[in-house]
Image 1 (spheres, rainbow, N blue to C red):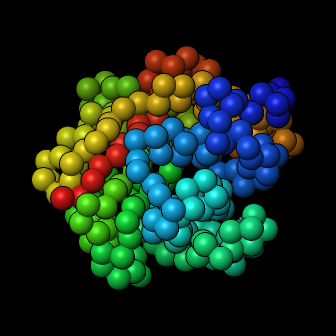
Image 2 (image 1 turned 90 degrees about the vertical axis):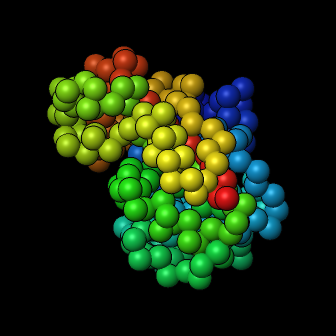
Length: 254
């Protein structure tokens, strides 16, 4: 069992440590999104007034963080979460005037072209962003010089090179793990388009440990949390950091 105090880590994540872990667990949809976002944001230049598309924003924790910590104007876009539910989170967090919730699928974004200074996607891009045609599509909504930042589940080696999805990962994730690419795969995938300059492509330094710590905390929240997280804990424990991580990729549009 993980004590909530273990989830406050000002040495590693000073901004995220200002947030109540219980609040964040109530919005849980996977690995700790604020840890991932804070790590990712270290390679981005986000200033007050920056207009950000939070793509795959889930229940809204990352959008709250972007508004509070960077003074950004955020559009929180997600397909699975009703906009009124996300809006309630934003209002309660005191950022209802700076964050707008939009329910939309990632391939039919209802925005004007070149209307964002940055696009951020945390633990979502693997579901829609691996196709060769997606980056050019997404960049339509980003202004010239605008920034793109993605934190996505990753493997330390490509499934193609391994020859198969490792059994302990396949048991939990199945075929979806083929979208968990290495950081270098993402670098090449973006750079080859010549549409962006990749400013960083790396694995999160503590990604596997963070993921396991957060899953244990989620499992301790009750029967529903245990059902959702215990298979993930088994997968991560069996992996022991050999294959599983998160890729953090940032780029600037030409």
